[in-house]
Length: 140
Ligand SMILES: [Zn+2]
Image (cartoon, rainbow, N blue to C red):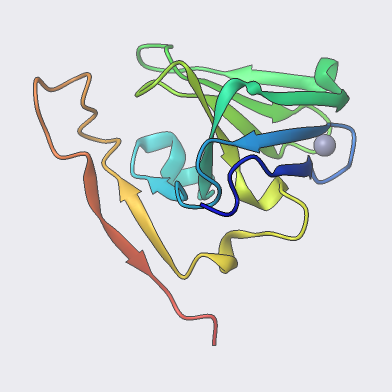
């Protein structure tokens, strides 16, 4: 897809943490997750490989949060609290990136977002639905 290979500039809210990120499949991977943490966080995430992030400033300002199996590592800016990215439990070789941190983009640029069934996590079940549904909302 056209976005492939494109590098996005990204930052947290306060600007302490800035990074460049190369996405695995452009914005095609945008999704929400229904796990207990993501429900509260409410962010739309896109995929990047672990070597797809290059921090420019503030990597030392990042804090991490982990729960349950502690596989997923959720990173957020310790100054402004904004979630920047997380190392995935479903694929530890990938990061999920907060689309709202990408320059010029936000969650409202994704009127239809796949909802990943994080409550019934595939690594908790032998098999299970990966996709809980599609969340639609209107910008109007
Ligand atoms: Zn910040």
